[in-house]
Amino acid sequence: MKIKVGIAHTDRVIEIESQDAEEVRSQVEEAFAGSRPMVWLQDTDGTQIGIPLDMLAFVEFERAEGRSGVGFASGG
Image 1 (tube, one colour):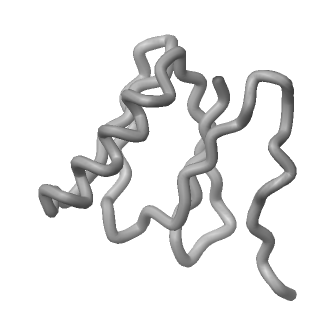
Image 2 (cartoon, one colour):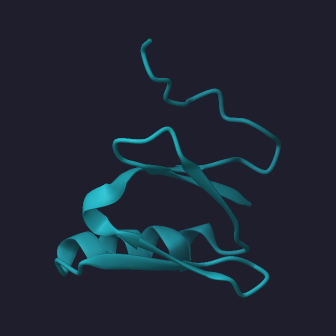
């Protein structure tokens, strides 16, 4: 499953491939609940990505069938 993570105050989006969307969701929720300064996510190839919690804008989980049709766009 493709997971997109938006970075606040930029147009940057990080894409992560994960087999366990619920694990990623739990990690993000636990980081907010525990007031941790960073959330660490791991891609299917083992790459670890650290995102400062105050820079996390959104997390989007893409359905296996394709795009969900829900997204964010900057005005301009």
